[in-house]
Image 1 (cartoon, one colour):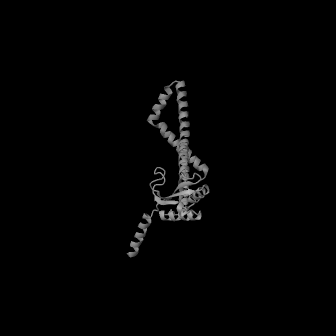
Image 2: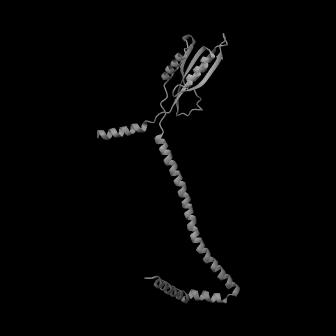
Image 3: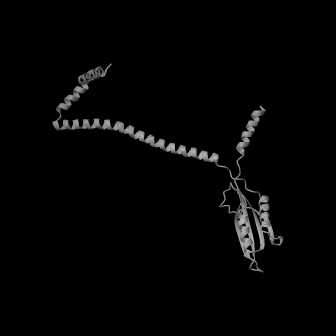
Length: 222
């Protein structure tokens, strides 16, 4: 069917519906009531009818447009969130865990090695003792474990004080947390120093891996 035949068919159907409406009882009553109105009231009704039709024609596409804009903004927000989650997942996969912190024994041996390097005499060594909670608990989360060593030395010259501080701070996976310096009472040109070195570590989560291994072990046994 061509466009002309569809147009004629549409016009014919429209005329049929129009004639049915005009022959209906409700339409006849409305028509009689409308004819009895004054010309001013009839003009107002016509204007209101035109406004109502225009409002309907405008509101329908406007509502679809508002809904489409809302869905578009929702999609943009979710897309950005999805990108951030994917980026965070990639970073988590590629990020390597820091090396485990040295134990107290390892810290002690490293400190003794530094003392030998700086040619610290046995008479200058007071004590090398392990300590706990080197850093304040308010500064370190409960999930972080910490271990430390306190090294007390005496009769150090200024060069040795500075060099040992640098060496203590350069020990792998550890940090010089505190250094107390006091001038020697007998000779103020020498100093008594306490170095506090701490190592921090994050416990590795092995529970999930252990569960997986146990499951695989059970499957293999079966």
